[in-house]
Image (cartoon, rainbow, N blue to C red; front, side, top):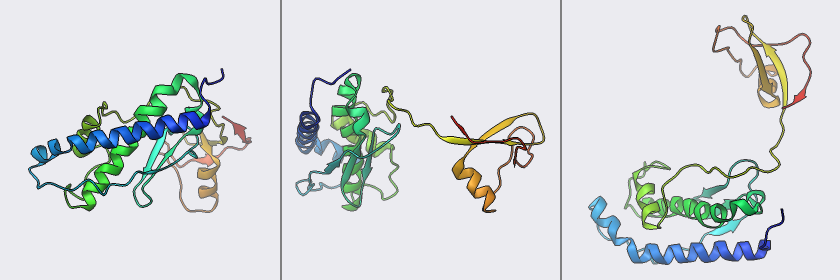
Length: 195
């Protein structure tokens, strides 16, 4: 199904939603001071984040503190059923992370503020959003991963990714069966399978 908006229109909607949320937060952030019994912090120098669309897989969005960047998943954005989640909820979720980091850097929040902790939840509420950690959007083009069969001392089959397989082969680590505590070893009749 084709989206009724072009990518450029979706990008404009996201930018407008973030800009509106920043303005709303600037007008409401005084509520944080009462919650944390801290002196007022000037929020006027908070800069609009750079937004890119280069995330892949199941992840909808990610905030990068050092670059003040929000990365969004373009594949999820282009699914019509994900419109509200990807144009409003996910960008504001990531914006909340950047706002918390802004206040941490100003000394307003504890530098050990958890990514989805109390500070983040309060910022989400001030942005007018439900503080949820994960999405439930339709995933498109789910990536298939090459896996190889490993066995242990019991009857369980263990399908390991090429990354784990290579770590074992290079003797960087070994994996243990949760059931029998036996060390996993490659199966005699093993071959790569897309799963």
